[in-house]
Length: 156
Image (tube, rainbow, N blue to C red):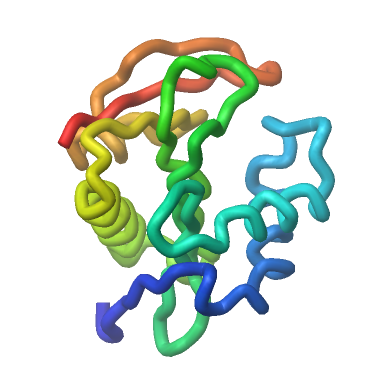
């Protein structure tokens, strides 16, 4: 990476919510068929906190938002007994393949520990190996909105 990435709370740059909501809707809308792009924006607005969940961060590169991450209390309509969740791990296509995804997830795992969180969950359609490299363990697989997903957990 030629430029140093930085992570900042979405709370500090809420003007990016419309663009981020569009990214998230296009990436994950099929998993949340009842939600519109406006609902995704509303969900992001609900994470504009700085010390309590839910929280969202943006990944900045050259002062441009190129990625996102969140820690949410719930991320699925199922598995309501599991909380909190690492969610919204997203990189703009131009930012992919540069190691930024690993950097982003590691940063948020560190933030979780700083918040006193000792366990996180996530679900992924297609990247369990990516998360396993970062210390996450598969918990189970299930069919969610017609897609086979892997639910994973991480213990600090």
